[in-house]
Image (cartoon, rainbow, N blue to C red; front, top):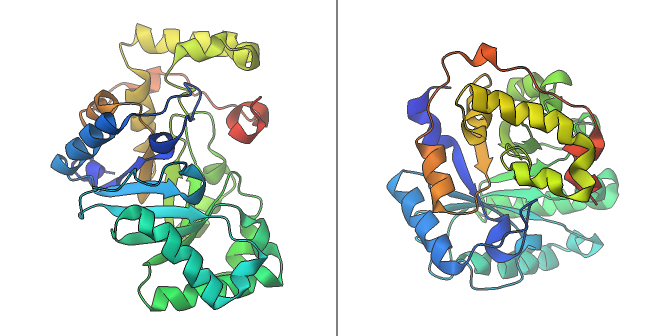
Length: 287
């Protein structure tokens, strides 16, 4: 991955635009959202990642610039087997984006796809894709286990998956290469693991104290080499050709640091730092 093309790969994560999200439990105010999107546009970042479940306010994207393209995630239920109902629900959801182009529509929960209802819902979405409701149909996953069945039975355009310095299951499982061979776009998310990898204060919280010693070494190692956590996490991505990278940020300054990051020349000095403990790397297990 060349640095010059990096901004074009970036997608602004919007989970904390409408509700509190991540280990910092931060919700960004509307003025900061405007600053983030203005800065993004100036730096040729024109994609936003969202989801049906993120919205508790309906006007977050009321005045969004038309140049932004949207990736959004849905959780269909059995009623979506009706094409009319499917279309109605998508019309309602897409209104939240003020008419901006929907680039990719992703299943936020794969379980509906494991039965015949899932296949019918998928075919309804394929019909709407042909009518240019959106460009791509995809899947958002927390782990690679369901991919064997899902990729064999559905024709997805995109897979959104976690990837960070702790969690490289998409690589070790072989699925990164398998998806590439099939021509399926791979979008990396959780690159900062909801702030866990960039904020030392998180380890004061009761649930994360059991890993405090590990992360004390991690942050100290970065300080010794004068590397910011954000900078290292971004550099780690450069070893792999992800098609898109979803970035979660708390403010415009975070985005500026991401856009202006520097390549690390002596990255081999930093100890590899992978952990296979699902109680840590899978946010669904956090308490």
